[in-house]
Length: 398
Ligand SMILES: Cc1cc2nc3c(=O)[nH]c(=O)nc-3n(C[C@H](O)[C@H](O)[C@H](O)COP(=O)(O)OP(=O)(O)OC[C@H]3O[C@@H](n4cnc5c(N)ncnc54)[C@H](O)[C@@H]3O)c2cc1C
Image (tube, rainbow, N blue to C red; front, side, top):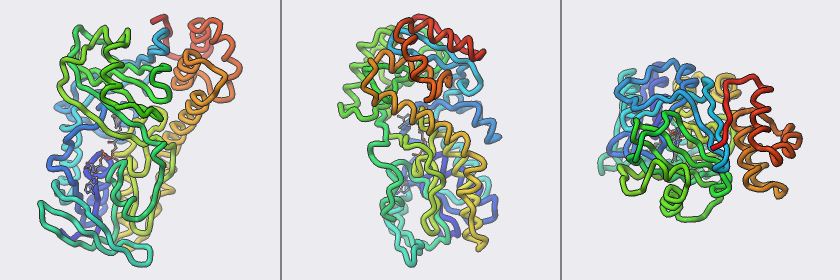
């Protein structure tokens, strides 16, 4: 089990890191506490194609269950925006298959991979971790890697062990989702629901075929029980209940997603944090699969360099490669937070403005200007913003 680079966590961030670390020539071990990598799933499973292209990755056809040629925003249950621009096209994957495929690629590049192996604790000296205690198939094993990649998710063991907190619990969305069988054919695009009933956060339908979808909510600052919230939301929602009842549940998927805004690539001594452990998601939507993979790939490369005595420059390269994407996500999220904390607007206006912000039809500086026309004639105001932008977006009544 000895290695130069230990990668903790075999999600997209960990597998990206283990692959690049091994390809950089470091003896690499990736561990995951799960008995089966990728299971249980805690995800909507949609992947935006823009970042797949950037990662030069080919998703195996066995992992793809649906293709989405647009994203639909259902705003305040009143207005629909359809966006068919490249960023809003995607595929739905079976994450069990996808995550295992990424771990397979890491192993094929030379990394050792051990499922059912949990990091229990670390010991440090002079700000560096010098040994890690693992539970490997029920046996305790101590190893001394030179560098560590913390890819261990939103509730990171390494962050806890090192006493660091990159984001507060308030910056964590509580997600709950059912994979459901639909009563009738569903539109083959991801649907995002923005409305006062959910507040900051959103609901979604992510197709996994003509009559199958992940239907869920991400709750920010809502303390209700997530399961009953979701059941009620599906049953009572005029659009969602047209397609789904809660009596055909194939899988229950629950998990937390960090949405703190861009925090850079945190490094603590010889530990490089990436993926959800470092809050590296597109904060306005919580998209994290490909951002985590891409950031993990950089963390692995720099961990290998550090382990081989050449130092690391993770933060700088991360800024160069991912900075624009992650900071754009953070800026949009900040505007959404501003909207949902303003007292001078009703929920319908907030939802419509949120849709306009997410589609980048209006920025923080333009909010005031469009506010009164949105309040007076919501649909017309949105259509005129779209016309002025000349973009491939359409708005209509729900
Ligand atoms: C409800 C929900 C829906 C989502 N939907 C989408 C979506 O549709 N599209 C999208 O792009 N993103 C989505 N996300 C976000 C996405 O799932 C994450 O951003 C992504 O999985 C992060 O990858 P990661 O590798 O950093 O972490 P994870 O995928 O969480 O992997 C971390 C791994 O670390 C392991 N681990 C943790 N502690 C230890 C330990 N002590 N020892 C060993 N192993 C450990 C865990 O078992 C886990 O396998 C969603 C999130 C939630 C909660």
